[in-house]
Image (cartoon, rainbow, N blue to C red):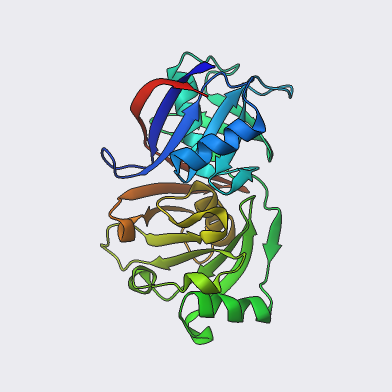
Length: 275
């Protein structure tokens, strides 16, 4: 079964500086086992499969896989797959919007100079209990006093968000991977005025088969829903991937109750795949 294939760099400020996603087009005949095997083989943060929609109002359906299994939603695959679908000749029902169907339901993406998705509702939110806070501190090799704030900000992958004192603290983290268990931890800290961005973000998710994700749309969406317009401005730019020699830039905008997450997308590989 030979299908069109794209690999798209997402949230990059230049070639090879963002987070790649592998995209298989017209994948309706691909089995779950084949999807899982290909995701393990690509060994990227996510591999996606474009299919015909099943819900009214959707332009296409997307299935999203990590090397460790399937996710209902993820951010950089949403942007990269929409880019690949449009580039392959996909025509959305609305000129200014693309509507993606995925495990989290329908996700809107607006088209402009770059693509941006509307953050889906959180499936888990609110305070983090004492036992989990202790476990998070151990996993990050920090003390409890180092955790400025924390909240569940899960929109599918299982994120718990942690606010640290500043970007330097975020960049200095050397996690204890053996202590994570099933925690997926996202950390954020602000830069001083004049820094390379407003905040630095890191995403640690060893339970998903990825120790550190280079640039993470779903995590940035959750952070925006948690902190934008409160501890962070309603419009800000997050840097992510610095610790992995990437230069991701995620643009977060809160408009009313909706958080939009966007960034650059560029195709780096095109061809075909035989599963």
